Length: 126
Image (tube, rainbow, N blue to C red; front, side):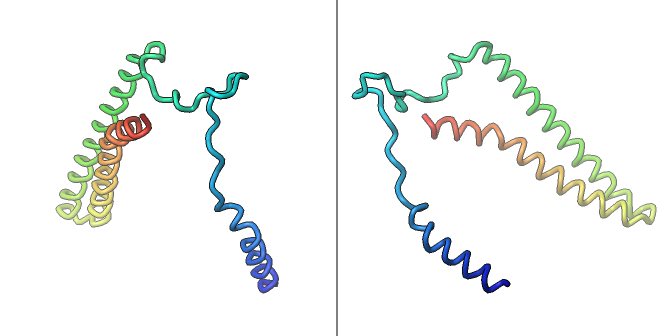
């Protein structure tokens, strides 16, 4: 049964594989077409074209601030649990506090770097 499935997969990949690797057709341009084709060269992000874009940026900054505050609170709570656990003889709490610090630290990195990644994507697209 498995040999038949392996033979079918190999045959399908051998037949369809080269067709999947072909170069895509070029993007159509609107200059030569009198019918008014879409001009792909003019597509770029423009925050000024969006109504009330400042509200969107304020909401994003508020979400960023709340995410950073939550991550810092998670790191602080994890540090407290990590340090208090061995004092009271509860190593499980200490281990969970250590895991909470790692998770909150990763969340802080992701939330903090989100604006940089989005800014890089917007400049790379333009």
